[in-house]
View 1: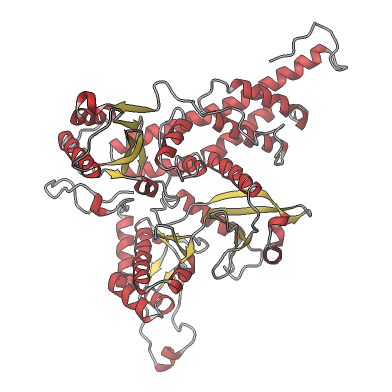
View 2: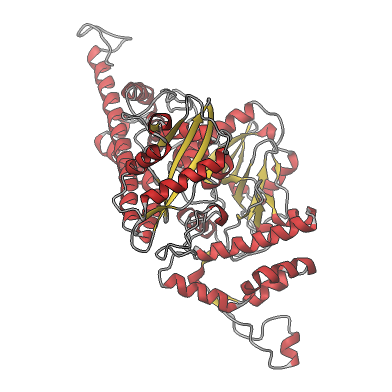
Length: 604
């Protein structure tokens, strides 16, 4: 709001005209930044609306393109906003001194905004780019949120409510199906209603007596990812919250059907796992969606939920706030992460914080450039991770309290990556790093496991490779140290410096030795191209332990045959998308009598 003073009266030694001019300029800058954000979020929502239309038409490749394109939306819009500001205002008008005024006008404009937390983050991105540095003072950027989203919601509200007491359960579920608003027919809507009724009866038990507050609440829009459309909801009974998800698929004739009904926090968390692709969801008020999801998954940080909804920058902002909060309320030190030291990355962790911090070494044992490694990480971020590749947050110029570093770790980082480390005595600033969820390295897990646990892990390890192959990903370095074991026992790949598209590889059989000398030679006697891969060699590096070899060959022996890999390449080149279920096969509704729905159809 402009200052209210009499015309011509001096204010602090300056004329009123000059004060009003400064306020007007600050207001104009604030409006321009907010317009840039509003354009970004309008395009973000349009992307989700397109995902719905493409799902309805079975355009799976189109959905994947939308998912890849959206990842770069934010940076494009920030650059647009910066460019417009620099073209409309002189550099002398965008200096440090005006940004506290700009922020004040910006906060006022957000009082009725429906995405204020995202708009604040956008303001931070634009202002720090204009000023060519990072600020951590609340005068200039939003270190803490200025506008609360605690009770913010859309109109109509972000979730619908159905009351089985009033209409009967079947009628409530039927209304729920109608409200999905799908522009394609159902295979059999009444069959879906009956199946959901049976699933609810099995979940709640035959003796279930619903309380007076019994209700079904579902988020207003579907969550789209690859071939799946997910209805996410909760059942309220006597104040207790029961989460559920209904995945929807399309059959070969373009008709929709419910594939399962999943209950419980663990099943929902599996859908939002950081090793999966991001959802596309049309949300007017994203904070209301996150609040709803937190009621289903209380242990899931908001940073991860925003990220899984495709709002990566907001996820990074919240994660950094969580890190600062944790550092204030803990006293342990950063140490080297357990496991075999990497040839390319230096990895450290804070034992009390469930993440690892990874930076690219200056002195690498592999002859690959820093740019190439960063490109591999970006490739994975843009790709469908099928629940088998860890997602990462990428940061620049991150300050850590120096006193929180173990001296041995600090010496190791200075030795491994001196160009990325700046130490001013109080803070250690790391110029570039990746952050991801901490897992137990598979090699350590195998060393500590019982025979039964080891067998499960090796089967899971082979499944992880198969599912990455289905997504056109070749891990490259398949040593156990490059895979992690999650708390749920799932095997996830996390070392990307040798990752490649499966279709870029040339899978070959090992040539037969021509002479005894060939057989005993320490180097290959045959020509090997840069993209050549010999699957028979995997056993030499991976299956030295007899018990591990027996399990692997029994369940995944074909992974040692070049023909397996070439067959998968052929299917990918034919355009087949062989995704994987984010829930167990046993939980799917039985469809043996449905000829148009192949039993092996997959979803991610």
